[in-house]
Image (cartoon, rainbow, N blue to C red; front, top):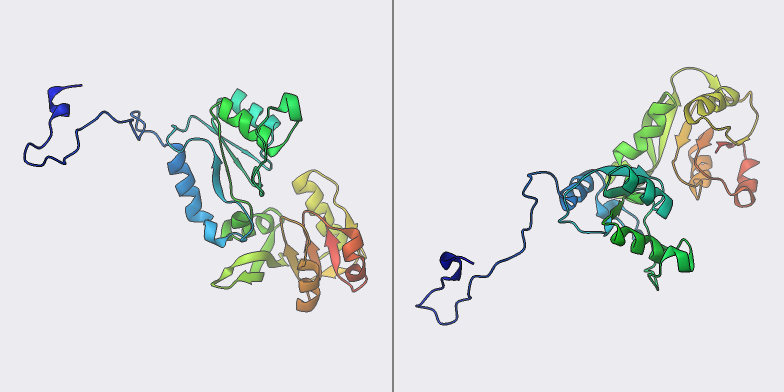
Length: 253
């Protein structure tokens, strides 16, 4: 420690001695993990997320320099291992690593894949995890992804947030041309490279579509109430929605 660093005020007996401190920013001038989180929170604010959700950085060190970023749907140890092998020290996921706080942090070799063992693996390998689940679902960027991929024209939000009519759950769209359910299913197959599950008359003409990246949830009832022809979503509970399917709502999952 230099003489300058040891100086203190002789006129104030209560002044603090200057001490060496940990560097709070990368000397390389690159982005730190906390900067990345703050940047993403601009597009996906935590206040937009559902009250039960976890948004932002849950695991890691915000002062670490970003060496690489990987993206995954779920924060699994397999996804973390692949990111680590590729040179990334940040994993950005849709789903959070936990909703309810873990009760233990034992390693995977002892307890298998759990939120606690995932966190233990990430910390042991210097990895950070951040997630933007429902904050992304309701964002303008998130809502417009599926319509753009499927060549649908966004028109409104099915279930808007109270203070943002352009944000919310489900994007109401219209096709770019006259199409039927069979043709729309073929578009989904071409885009997602997976055979969709289809409910409804394949020849039915579709004038309005709601897209949702998550579960059908309560969207099916909202679609019927709004006179929507077709709902495209990530997951359908056939037992829960069997009654609604008989009410002329077409579904693609």
